[in-house]
Length: 59
Ligand SMILES: [Zn+2]
Image (cartoon, rainbow, N blue to C red; front, side):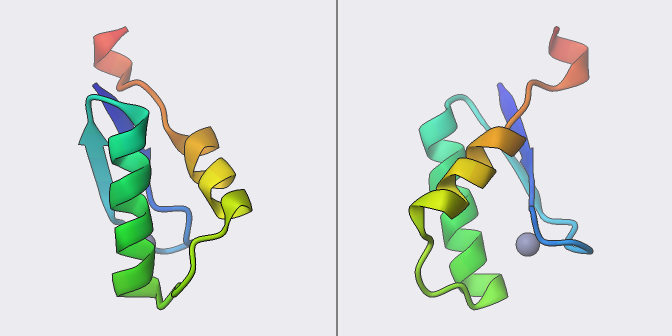
């Protein structure tokens, strides 16, 4: 399982999923719906990927 917290400062949205692609998909959807980010650019996807991590308890 992997975890991700929203990269927008002050936003407490987070998600977890089994694979990175699913997290990126959910994060992009969240950016569109909540932060009015109509187009999620490739560099934004890179920033999302860099923030994906394993939950501490699962290591
Ligand atoms: Zn957010």
